[in-house]
Length: 294
Image (cartoon, rainbow, N blue to C red; front, side, top):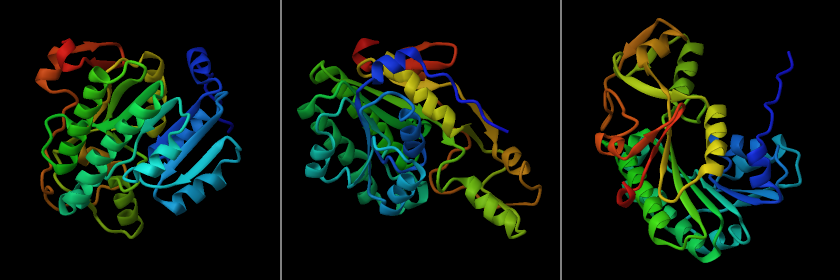
């Protein structure tokens, strides 16, 4: 069966034509799919910056396009960032330490990458003046209970500050997602392995709920937000919330409860009560206005 490609959006064709795009963490689950989708448009080039050499190699083998640039480097390396960002029109920042358990046991490294790395990118953008800067965040940034969530909340605040207090030539926005089905290291990878080994699926709490979204929906939403980017706003797509036990039951009814992990909540939220007061609701999203514009 041949899958039909979605028709390219005219607004995006105009916006992306002859543009150079930088994706940080671009060899990851979201970044790599985003790069592939952007290559469908008449861009000049898409630069993928990542510290994972093997992931860059795999992406390069999967995509046969001379407009794809594979850049090995870290967002903590200011000199590398400046080279990567030279003459870039759009920055999409997906790089982060996102595993909750790893971030809790490696707080200094998590803060360094998720906060200082974002600061480095903002400073680079101030100097090089791209037209658009999109920061990718998580629902765990809304009323955070984990270190990961706290660092992403602070990165959202940094982008909001840059959007409202830095030069107007660059538009800074954040896009906030829930759990991505196809992301590396997610619970479905664990369940798939357990199921293949005929083991019960590990569940933290059967009544726990999480928002889920497919990676292709993530990519489409990021691209949808590009033409409507406004300084300091946070875009939040409307997502479905699922009970963990219901998601696991689609794979196997053989399950074991292992207990909640440090900092985990029974249910995440997409917006805080305070944010909802300064948000505008659309059919498929909320747009949270920055503090001083509410």
